Length: 263
Image 1 (cartoon, rainbow, N blue to C red):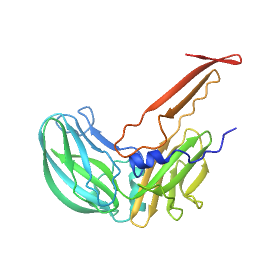
Image 2: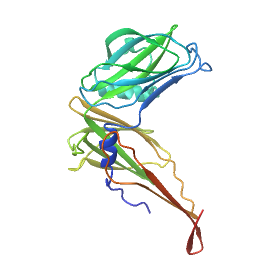
Image 3: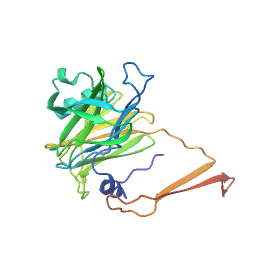
Image 4: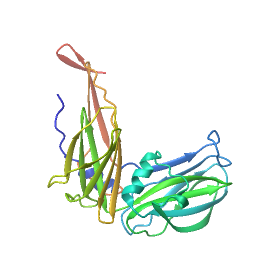
């Protein structure tokens, strides 16, 4: 029987990571169709707060010049849906009515690791297009003061929408769950929390919006519950400041009869 999930200790994620889920990363390698000369990876180590200057990490197999175009979603709801439908890698953005071109420029990259600044941006959903030799890759960039946290367990998921930086609930946010059976709207309670029944192996993508602030989360849960093993994982403390190192400790035990023994 699945236990009810509660939004405890999640604040450490909010203060340390800010809005949304894991960093977006796009990579093209020589084995892929239509690639650059050498491997190229562009990673948005965000999401980023409104007014913040997004800085992206770039890794290139050789030096060269990238033709860059930054697009902003006109309607973040439909734009997010189109990104979800394309696996997060939108194509032909200049022909996509969900996006508007913000600016275009060239950027020289050297072999190895470098950074790329987009300058201060207002809250919104952006996509950076990086091109060379007629090929391109696309990197979603989220600028927002909103955060959506997803916790998954057997047969259910907990969705929690809060203000980034202070963890205050945002119960009036509009939240759409994109699952295998299509999109559906979630109703939040006064704590900004919604619980939803899901299939264990189902991939969940969530889009939350409150005014100009948006948040996107992607959560997949692969069940694993061997009866002869128990694993407990905890952090070294419940709260962190931005930039601090998060320590994680795990304890694993093997169940033998009515006793537990270390691995």
